[in-house]
Length: 204
Image 1 (cartoon, rainbow, N blue to C red):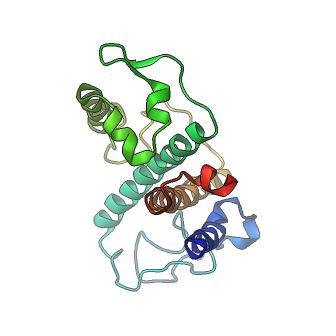
Image 2 (image 1 turned 180 degrees about the vertical axis):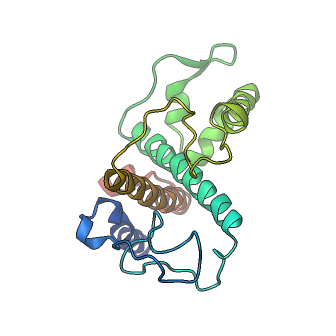
């Protein structure tokens, strides 16, 4: 278990370059590889690896856009998931009832682990969650053609005009999302192996 925590900590430190100062980030270098739209200036291309694509999966620009969109979405969900996993362990939960008809309180769900909590949510509640996600994915936050990957705020959303600030913010979001995907995986594995949440395990 200590080995698992050590590996997770090492990955966390190595992936948190979204918080790193600008001198650690790859400077824009156009023409470093033979790709028209995908090069060292792309969001998420950071030192020390730079552009790392040993299998040439990025040659297909359309496929790259699709994968980048998926990566950003998964990263955003993972960041929320990490908060949702840790907050109840710190005593932060919604008051009242999740379902009055089933007599289920929010505290009943938050007291369980990540996997066990799923069994506490009534079937109709799970259906509502899935429907909400489908509505956001297909309509409200749909990825429109011609918009940058992850840009689902609609035409009226205020965006950064300064390209340097914009690139910095996008890099931080992408890197923090990558870290969150590793983090939520580590938290759930930790729970399954030890039977305790991360906070409970560390405090114990």
